[in-house]
Image (tube, rainbow, N blue to C red; front, top):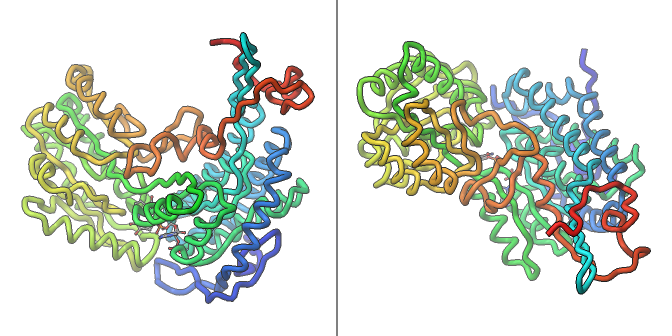
Length: 521
Ligand code: NAP
């Protein structure tokens, strides 16, 4: 029996659950389109301002916390999330239609991510200290937190890219308070995770303004949040439209601020002839491809939406296998009615393009919003002449693009928009052609894979989940992995300061034992 907490149905502002006066929303069960209790009252502008003011105040003390204190705080958030895992998963499944197995994995990823950031803080490397003792002046550089960060989470990862997801974890790790705009597609899940963060704030006697959770409409309260002078940076995951709107607001402020928006990608996969040789190779490849499209109903930012397959007998046989497997597949519930409708519009648009054929479609799943996965086929010249074929369809759909020679892949790699990932399916036999394509793929994407499929994203120190526009608004960063801390910090140089004034990481005493580069240039 899962213990169920009473949900407040309102925003967490400066440590208090505070009813709003700006209308209300509810979550929906996408399997039935039924409303879910409770209704969530939306914060008004004055309440948003209270939350931002609290975050600004909290920054003064939170930025001075020791690595140990901050790491313990992140670990407590992780522990609290794990302790409420069953209840969070149950609510998230109701609100998103995602299955228990997927959400169990996602909750582990979310708490492990927080623990990884905690470990990273303890090493002290994120201060990125450089000390240069002369010859003319003593210069000491370290990175300091930016200030309060506004975070917008995505609908498709209600835990790992939401309330206490990657951007929140990175900002808190860096020493920045967070004002999180709750996603209206999973309001109850947002509250349960918000409580886990609130519990950790209280346990460690931190300023209550360190974490605020605001319910409201993106185009209203979200925009006000992004425009507020006390906000120093924005982390966002979601649609291109939303990411661009926030980027525009941030750049038009009197004091512009950085926006780290992870938006859309089609994640091209380049299949070389060698990958289709051997009795089982094509079968295994086709199985893995169908799984990467149908898993989570294709609602993954790394879903491979474009697959380049060579013409010829082996390519034809591979495409036929894919067609069979798609026909046998069935749909899973999508996150919301609106997202299912957007998927249908995308599929209809692609279907209406000249020289684009439906190769196969699976059957619709049970309940509402579970359309059958669909795969299209076209030719590389058609893709090069029609930008619509490059557009992401969020959900279970993909386009197979046939090519005649590996040199045509260079044209495609140069014509494609910036991507989160680019995947190579090849063997030793293809190495020469792959090596010629590789520099173009580095320019194209934030992560280049050899073999495998791009949908799994490891949370680690060397991961880049980012890439050139429009995959993200800033290709110099990542939204997954510990490098993300750097988004919310900036370098400061201290020239000739006496030892007693130097902050701990750059002082001679170095009592936090931070790793440092000293006179090594
Ligand atoms: P989203 O609609 O962009 O929403 C993400 C968050 O940003 C929400 O909290 C939203 O608030 C807010 N927001 C949206 N537009 C805004 C604006 N103009 N100004 C300020 N805040 C804004 O993304 P999503 O919920 O993850 O996905 C929904 C749509 O994005 C789908 O239709 C899908 O096709 C597309 N998409 C998503 C991804 C992804 O990785 N998540 C990738 C590709 C495409 P509200 O909920 O109040 O609007």
